Amino acid sequence: MLPEKNISLEEFMRGLSELQVIPHLRLRRSQSGNPDEHDLIFLVCTQEPNEGAHIGRVCLCCIGNASINDYEGFKDSMSTEHYDAILNLLFNFTYTDVKYKAINK
Image (cartoon, rainbow, N blue to C red):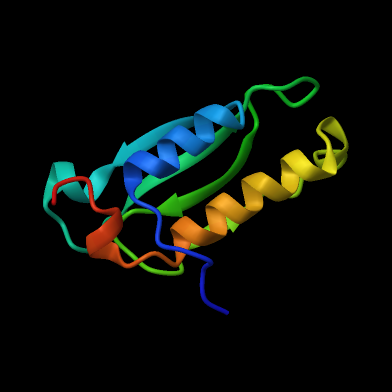
């Protein structure tokens, strides 16, 4: 299944902000230059009762490298529409071409 559209890093960050999700960047590949490392964005929940929990993560330097954490009761802490919007944004960014979602163009 392909994403609905390609999403740039700027669009992804804006979408996270609109969904009240804080991005936590860990740019190991960019900092070390080691191709075995990855540049990751962790998605941090800002809503109670799971405030501070990692919703999931996505890689900036790979296509298809992402995960969602499904903590007990996590979906219940937000509306179905809100949760689905987060998943849709994450899915679209996960399968966006690496050149399009890169930090430096």
